[in-house]
Length: 116
Image 1 (cartoon, rainbow, N blue to C red):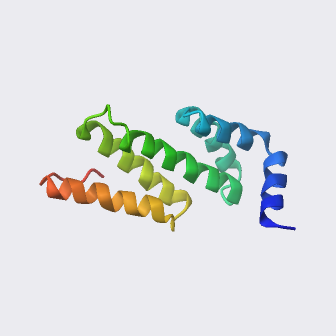
Image 2 (cartoon, one colour; image 1 turned 120 degrees about the vertical axis):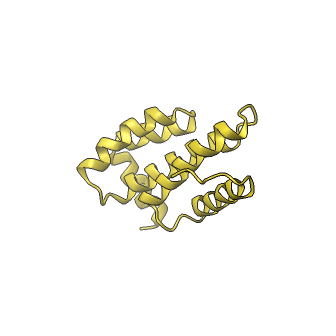
């Protein structure tokens, strides 16, 4: 069985996961996270839920980071928080790691403390 087929079977088996992923696609990140958090609580080792949580936080962070209507002081802190959350579900997520480094570098260049 291919990985793609296995993933499709897992998604079909969990309609809440599918619903959350649709919310992420629609930009409704908080709603998606509200669906995923209880799923994660019931089984913290569920790889599909962990992947979905990492993806939701990554996209949520991007929604701040790449929002041209937000000034830097309103985008970097929330984006950094979301990218750090990604790493709690996917510690090796290179995209989140790179974006964290970028934002921390921006704070350092401005001579400001990096938010924790």
